[in-house]
Image (cartoon, rainbow, N blue to C red):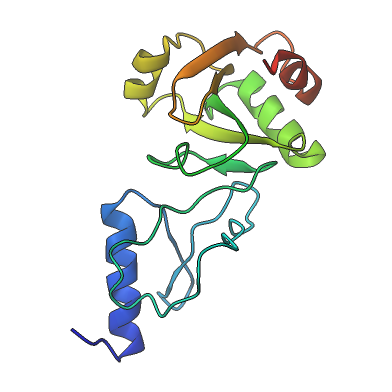
Length: 167
């Protein structure tokens, strides 16, 4: 099938992203835009992936987060991201979570570390998988998403504490 109308292509891409769990944003014109990292930047494209028209390529790789990024968690993103990875179980109502979130945005993430912001309230499946019982928990994971170590930064929600906890 050949899609030539830009609106149809945009709708198709947005639909595919929604079905795969990738978040998209919509601008004021109703046009779907690319996924963004928590600080509003677009994830860095993979330079090893050849450019294409994207019209009918179902084998597109899962978007990945660049090392040193702070991004919203989505399924499949851990496996598609290289480097050291940490899940930050964040609750919007938690003052310590907000403090660590603000510190990560202001100071940035340490080089080579990707922090995935996981919604503490809605991702009970991940809380159960990693044994998380308190917000501000950081779980370091390997390339397959298996836990390496975890720590709770409730008493000291800072980038320095996060760095000190890196395995």
